[in-house]
Length: 259
Image (tube, rainbow, N blue to C red; front, side):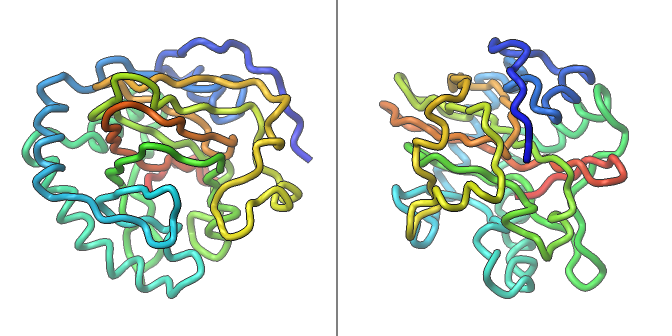
């Protein structure tokens, strides 16, 4: 069983190697890179995203719009279907970022400079190739949940990660609300009994006594937190658009991106 350690601090932490390693160990709640993108860059991304338009996840309530493809959608389907969709997803992502900048490449550079020289897109094997990374989402509300490849992808290469983070760049933010609440409670196998039937969400009683960090969405800021921690997005007034991917630490220490 995982032992919950009280977070060292609840305020935003800057990006450096010490804080990144602490985040992997769940000793701090999040890292924020303020003004990771300029207002002009975010405006250009927003216009490109509007031009492309969102698709919506199947059988997900409340609705979540997205551009790109996720491994989670294929967790109980043919693995080949995901990798077949990667080429189209990459083309659409490049269509959006070519009109502004590529957040994934900028973050990879930041991580190489501050954390590790080994940062790359996750790779399955010669039969499948690279994963997709750089999901664009419109989320007005998200239920309490976790994202952890050991649970969602046990038979995939990413299922070997020893720890998993997620980053979100806020391209558009609500005028009020839209906060992402991250709880100091990491998923354990026994927590599956709290899963809401027919939903990706978990019962809120699971985190009733946990520390919580409120990550406020600010346009141009990039926030990284441990996605094995239970988290949710509260309703907001106005549109909330993010670009994101997971960052997994592999057994050898390499960092890999995927969505």
